[in-house]
Length: 346
Image (cartoon, rainbow, N blue to C red; front, side, top):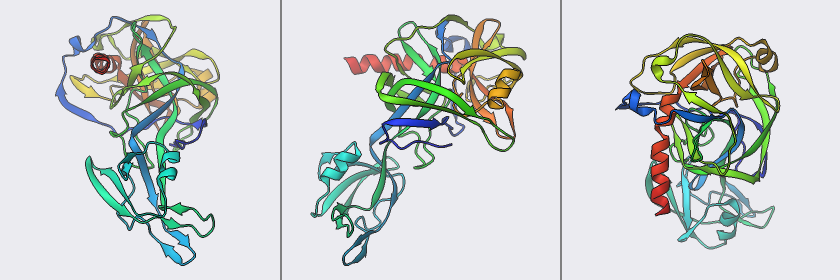
């Protein structure tokens, strides 16, 4: 999966978020997990940017000076470290980092595996530009496009159906907050056996429509400023059967229903991303995308006029097949998002 650099303003996307399969060892009461009888149907694309509490190190390198090569960080920083402060000043953007670097030695506060540490660094004067540098490649955020699954009456949404993970840095849990934006999808690169396809789209950061408050194994969650969608009943897990169903998704500029088959369902009393196996049967979607492609994560699955789940993964060996998550698992997290929001407001 390709992830765009956080410092790009306009993001041309060939994207869907992959996540590591994750299972909580906590039992849930499936009947009580479904906190909503009705939700507004998603299926629309959104741009997503999620951040850590600082800047993520992708790579360290030498700086070529007039006196030879030098490593300003001395090997103290490595891929996946999160830089939070330089000389006691918080840094959250590339521009802030650049402004903080001078010829003076500096103390970098960073986080690795949840533990803080200090790296003593000596910036080096680049022979070509004449600027002092730390020899660090960093990123501000992970950005891409996903699909909204549902929105509640109070404007809380769920999307993607799985966690956002960053393949460049190896981080996932550290990305917990951010924003969502209006996005457009103009087409797709078709999936083939052994290679997943990709939706092609873009968003502009000035077009913000909501927040990301949580990044979980079963989707991202937050508050959307305004959303207008069709109300749809929510299915209990016991109502979901193998057989004909639909997904509601956007692949060429307009949201539409496409025929699928629920091939297999799994009885689950604990959270799992992979709750059912689905197969695309609609010739229109197969012609456009080859089946399920990256970027369709979060597309709602509908059966018997009820929302039953969301698309989460594609089989690389057969792009017409993939996994879905039960809607009850996604809705279960909305109440905790609401609680966190109320606590923050207080």
